[in-house]
Amino acid sequence: MTNDLKKTPLYQTFVDNDAKIVEFGGWAMPVQFSSIKEEHIAVRTGVGIFDVSHMGEILITGSESAQFIQYMLSNDTNLITTEKAQYTALCNENGGIIDDLITYKLDQDTFLLVVNAANTDKDFNWIKSNSSNFNVEVENVSDQYGQLAIQGPKARKLIQQDVDFDLSSMKPFDVVHSVSYLGKTIMLSQSGYTGEDGFEIYCKAEDCVALWNHFIKHGVTPCGLGSRDTLRLEAGLPLHGQDLSETITPYEGGIAFAAKPLIEPDFIGKSVLKEQKENGAKRRTIGIEIIDKGIPRTGYEVLDIEGSRIGEVTSGTQSPKSGKSIGLAIIDRDQFELDKEILIQIRKRQVKAKIVKKNQITK
Picture 1 (cartoon, rainbow, N blue to C red):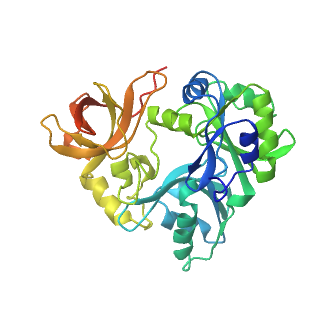
Picture 2: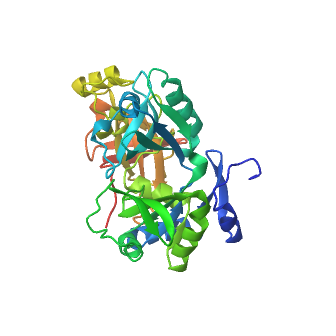
Picture 3: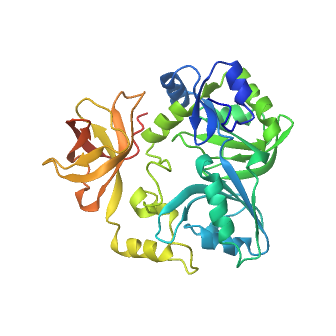
């Protein structure tokens, strides 16, 4: 099964430790080490580590790199500094989300785009195809990077033990470049995908195993894709390919904060996003919670209480912490009302649910 799949530098480490390996976006990745519930709770209450080296890295260099990424991305990239990363979207001409990603400014003319693993080649080709009118170089440098996510309320204290500067002032999307960590040179970003405090370490691919083993030795819980998904759903964080897609705009997908269509420079998809900013999108993403029994799954129909279709589920799971069945859905905008009862078509049954806030983390 795994012979034809891409593998991160940690693949053999996972095999040797009996992790359950699955295919994800063309990669052989661990879905769990112990159990999804144990890993989920470890991140909510302590600290866990994820291998996210499958994520793609695209390097933009050249004298017009700042103008180019402003043209390609939906957020106002003029706000990015070398100390601050930015969440944004790569859109098509219709405002649909080709990918959501994080942009890092390495220096005045150098930007690193961290993209979703399954979209790396597509993103690279799209960006490259739009670069001819700018003095830039576009490179796929994914093979050069390893990436580890250290997540949970105890992550900051743990990492602080091995760095010689104060982490207490770091806020979400703050970045420190060229950090010496256990004799390795890393980039440290205060970011993650769990709704918890935490950091992402960018390192050379060959340094991944040593760093991973260090954290495991210090009692950090190894975590797989299963808990990554339940954690991000509790936090209301969208996943591209499910909650975000090329037919869903940032205003429909719940990431309006990553779109700045009223800024002066043109960018791809701006006209559609400007219209939605001014007049409202026809759809919006909501949080859902099942009242009856059942788990919402991607593609299930969402109905109003009379049984008329108003949208569909984009992601769903059972929360390991609360035991509730929760999810995200995209519905007609005029149907939104917090605590409103709706129906979810689960196979041949119509199950009662209600509209709730997307972030459902319960401390």
